Length: 468
Ligand SMILES: [Zn+2]
Image: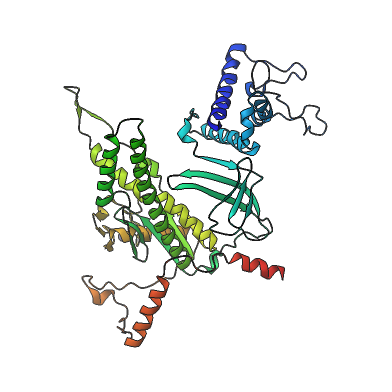
């Protein structure tokens, strides 16, 4: 039913837009105001173009309705002519039209024109009101009360803004958006108080290389050898079943479950990275990568004499594209941003141009600076690991952008050609006593315990302190 209303409303909008070219421009007789086809009721099914309330002062003409408002005002009529729509809650139907509005807004901003979706696209719906939650029971209007796994209780004073139900392979999931306007916004650390800054360079072999040369490996959740083999076998099993049969549906679910598992593991891994970064550093910088541009296909190559297509390296690029999609850098970035905002840390993105080619010491940019894994500056002779240089550059750019003062350290190259000249002082080689080393190891283990900390949000403490 949701699919049917969505497609009906989309067709209605397309029709009323097209009718403008048949009827020509016209105006309203009463006010002589020019009329947009979507706000006109003549001939179309789009309803009354004017708002009944909301006339501005000194202006007899009431405000115009938007296309979405007209269509949601028509919903009661829809229920009269098609009584079976009464089985759906009103707010769900209204949100369905908002969904179409969103698709149109995307089109006006340069995305593709909204499609007529099919049934499988509608895997979720949203309530705006009327949902009640009681411990492990949830009441959904027009559906009824049912039990569910309440993973997190709603804190006192919060109102439910919207409730979305999603159908996934492993069942139905509900996500609840809550709001309390009394809670202050998360305070963000000021630039003067920043103690530690980090730049993160993302990659495929190493997911993150930090400016302090710490590396996070990329487990390649969907492109590692084992998973690809599993996927290949399970997808082959689908293709061997007859189309439209129950067995084909079952084996399709097996593949979908594997995909879901991959997504879940990746999400958990990324959250872990994000929280660790946000806990440790006061300011985090990343590259502003346009991942969609990196995923472009190779240009086709044509032989001018014979007109035949030559190999253009797309097969190799496809493998790289798969690895880039698997790393899902943008997801990681949004998670780091979220974790940083939650803990009141600074997060920003810097322009990515030449981040692995410019020298962090003298800022000389040259493609020949980098030779695969090793970075050697052709101007000043600075050398380092190529991955590390990317992180350093991002850190410096970010610090420059927000005017964060970085603490300077004199670098001592241990294996440089003339170490005596570079050293300004001898670094004492202090080895920790055995007891201290052991203590350090114990503390490290404690930090490594997985799972959420017992207190998730410290903002509640702030609020209760303010109240008392
Ligand atoms: Zn240099």
